Amino acid sequence: MQVIQYGNIYYFGFIMIGIVLTIGCVFLLRNKSRKYIHNFIFILLVSAFVLHFLKLLFEPYVSGLPQTIRKSTFENICAVSTLLFPWFYISKKKYLHDYMVVIGILSGLSAYIIPTEALGKDVYTFDVIRFYYAHLIIFLAPFLMVYFKLYRLELKRIFFIPFIFYGILAIILINEIILITIDYVEGDFNSLFDPNYRNSSFIFGPTEYFQNARWILTMFVPKFLIIPFYWPIIWLMIPAYLYICLFGFIIWLIFNGKEIKIRSKRI
Image: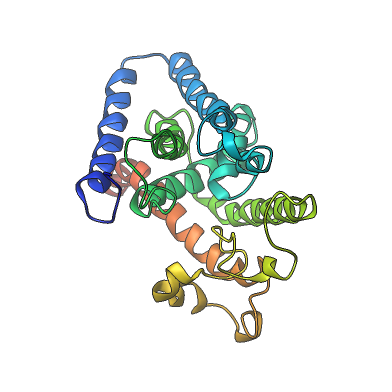
């Protein structure tokens, strides 16, 4: 069986495919009208949204119904993005677009670098292809938005993005409580606080898988918020705020660098 592992040919192969598809979309859209680009991005987002539910018709989901319906709910940050991004995109709320750009690019790239849901799985399976496609769209749609200037990320609004992120974490937490209540996941409310149990969004602390990098998040957190247990969502508020704003600033700098250079020359 040909499986995806860190550093093997398939791991880097999917990264290269993502890069090629991104470049291909840029070339495809470079001479198109704003309306065409807008519609193209919306179709991408809707395709990922539809796939989020259609996957239940394939293995490994179809044989586990109805419990596997949980896989089409707000289980994690990327699932929430897949479900909400099409409607954020057509919204006129700039703060939702800000969230799309920063969190979409960040989480989409992270999924390719750390593909936890695909590791150890056969490359030529539906679920692996679906995983990479869904996360490519999460990255690609907001990337195309700012690349083709359909949307402009403003520096002053970056500082509000973490507050939307806190709301997304609350949705994930509520979703998890509902799933436990209706017995769609194994466990109970005691296991809910276990950081290694269904905790891909770090609501209950860093998972065992990320223990070596835990200090990156906890260095800004007061000890009483993580000892003897991690306070759900609250413990993550400070590091999330700092890192989201930092990454937002980097994205703003990348897409506004030329303008900044021109202004500096004029000065």
